[in-house]
Image 1 (cartoon, rainbow, N blue to C red):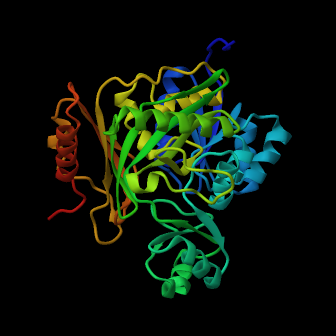
Image 2: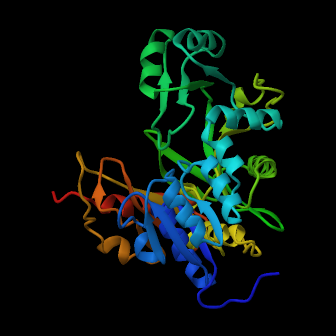
Image 3: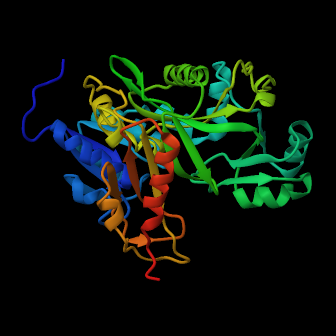
Length: 402
């Protein structure tokens, strides 16, 4: 049973105070829940909307222990949190940590993540661990080229990922990703999909499947519902629920998927026992709210951020029902070098009905850095027109003064 509300309310400690921490704070307030974040950047993006910020590293024992001492529940909004440290403070302070440190540990290692999925019979692309150039070349003999080489740890927004076109590039590509690596076959896909799933104390739920549009390995837009057949959408939901069953700990999970093209759909995976029975393959999982779920703030009854706070604190989940057709488009740094962030030309987006601007509060803008997003909801289901208009609104704003 949910405890009664009082002031001050329960406190959720969040490792990470970036834009996800900011939006968690915005969602927690109406529920009577206070948020304290831990982030190494003074006056981090979350700081204006949360109760307090502890300045410290994501893996700094002293400050993580301070966070645990002040919190009734712990979570994280970045995979750079230290699972071993979270395990210790969970025990030392008797504070629940969700999702579980063990889940974070598995997700942090892309190879371990793929192994866990494959062992559970969840469909994934073919993959191999590669410790040196010779092993990479041997894998390419089997997979062919192109293929994708990924750093096992630390990569995001395209960092740590590198396509390889020829076995002759093995040494250079491994050097570019750095550290331990894995290689995946190149998947011919019709579209990239994502399901934002929620695991609560009393069960699991999923939001409407979205269609993700990437360029330069960075998410540019999410279109919801995805422009795919109902059969494909049902497969995506089914696979996502299998993933959620595998995860340990409450919270929101971003599940990235490929809808394979017809010629790929019948091929067999060689990873464990995971045969590809259908058109959906799991790409990666994030054990936290995800960029492709930002559409839920305006487009769903209860946003992914509200759901995460509800789940972590053991409250009943809200509705994941979609309100309207929705397009989310990221605002990225359109500059050539780092400079103070001043977003200009805002009148069009602010004066457009059913458009919502979200500013992340970052002090500096870098090339292609995520600085905010725009959500556009539609009164009808013409998703193509909605996507064109959302792009126009996004392209109208700029960080340059030309």
